Length: 142
Image (cartoon, one colour):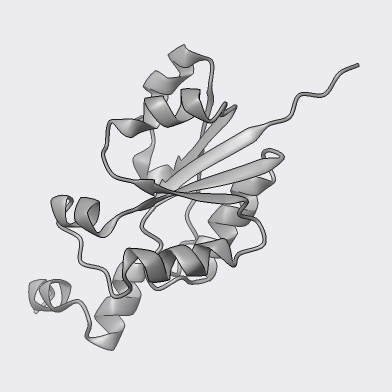
């Protein structure tokens, strides 16, 4: 019986790294032998309307320090996912379940697509709101 080396990929911003992120990375790594994290660049986050506390390079250092992560690459566009899957020999694509259904098209490429439940009691948005760092969210709730 042969065992196939399984590469897993996930995408995200990972700003204000917290235990919800660690849970996602741990569970993603448990699905394979090698975990690639595509980390949204500062420029891509601006296109998405996101403002980060930490720069791309700072976030990259934090994510690289997590023991479940084998490789960090830049995420620069929405469209790069299909290319990354092919170029990196990815077996499993993982995202949080708030993206459920959005990346099912990758199954047509022979990739397993898994949507993992988020850690419900924690989010970067909530941390920013609680600390007064997310003025837009704070003003919206007033």
